[in-house]
Length: 377
Image: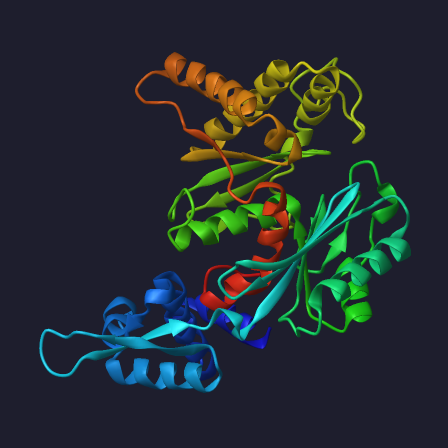
């Protein structure tokens, strides 16, 4: 975690300058990210220098430290246009691991990921988020311990429904579970496990996972802006603006499900009437999936109009069970909006990668991404 925090502070230093230890961490993150994206084929020191803008001497020092720490290794030699063949370096995926923990309202998913984000172990268990903090923390800790099998991870990323305070790791009034208001989940779980813990909303974690995957060439977007809409036991959004997860000053961004679109609509568990969440979940419960998709599309159209984003991605267990219906329905609403406004094509709609464990994988990236300068954790 120390390295991750240093990399983050380096990226935020701006015109005031960067102290040398932080700069070293920032530069090491740049090199590590290129090693990560190069994959098993590896990358030469000369290419690292060209792509980072660092001097060959600086790259040699950084890669020497990374090799000494077991994070990088030789991946063979590559023919050169002149002189001796170049040594190629690669990331060592098994040199570090992180746990991603998704606490849904009725189910727990835990994954153990290596440095590339690949899942090397997984566990699932029933969960009752209303059983009380002590029971939930103990159950989650037990699943994490069973998952580790002797591995010592960088830490645990926890993703669950909001609202919450990402910076402090404190929950607010989770919809349907007001008893969680004010509970310091990060500190409680860290104290129980003896590991660093980062807490974020499920939608933010999933969006981070997509953004980091995109940066490595495996995801659907590059440095652009997109909305991840999660429909499962609830409804929320994760927003990526300019390649970075947008949480807002109080982690309040993305409370998508509780925008009111029908003033005299059914009562939502949040206390309002006619929220997108209650309208969407009611339609799903009645089996009218086309209606649910149109409601979700109305919310997506609001986001597109407000943020001018490039892409809408759908996820969550309800979407996963009916992908074609939701992609078609949301896409139709966005298409109608584009035709009314004219002057452009509809924003594309797709299914987020990761499937049922996408949130858990994103939660692991809360620990992993900062190591590569790809997120603030």
